[in-house]
Length: 330
Image (cartoon, rainbow, N blue to C red; front, top):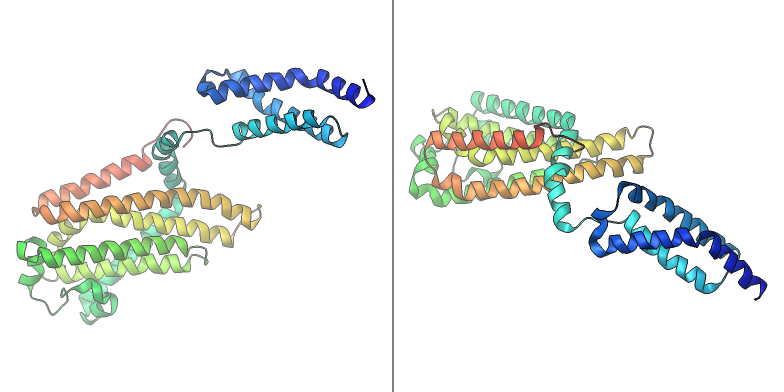
């Protein structure tokens, strides 16, 4: 036996027991029996992996047997994907997202959510007061595609007809589609542009609030404020909450860019992006739900009490889902 072979044999004899144990644990885990591993075995896996990496480093540095190095490299690759890779099935990952990932991200954004919600409410109040005092403000605030003939020159009968009458459903569908598209664009842009020091996010959320306030002022001035509110809340609770959460996600990114803290700016932004990204994935789901409510419930249900009841129910559902205390980490 040559000197190199003797050294390789001794090297293997000193460490092979750990390699074999790691290989056995990996074989059980890869066969779909990871749940059967005991707590001690799960704790041993990263320790055995680090010992294996150390052995591989020594083997390469001392130019040991090539077949031994190849064996260690293959075992290290298997162990890496188990120790650090994604081992959760897509169905389990999806369930975890809905169970804890999404609501946890929303709760983590509670400060930014309060700021975003306050901007929306205050801007809606400003839009309401401006149009109430001077109807000319309506045209300046409302985008052209959003009016569809619903402006201060319209008759009260016409404004009411689009909320209840069957002959108004065609125009109502167009308006509903525009509202959904408009709010969806604002939500996505509010998040995407948040990195620009929060300013575009605040402006977009504020623009949405101004439009909402102007529309409420128009209908309230004709004695139709409660009726319009019922028409809006069926989908609006979900859609506006989604807009507020998108703004909160954008604020988290912008604030992190300005004040990264002790961590590097890129590291801090990556960490903030994980939370904001999880929240935004949920926002897309909320917008889809709002679209379903808008396309079915709002156009088929014409009773004011029923409309307000559905709006209250959706507010309760989202509130409990996001903010009801949960056991364990979010």
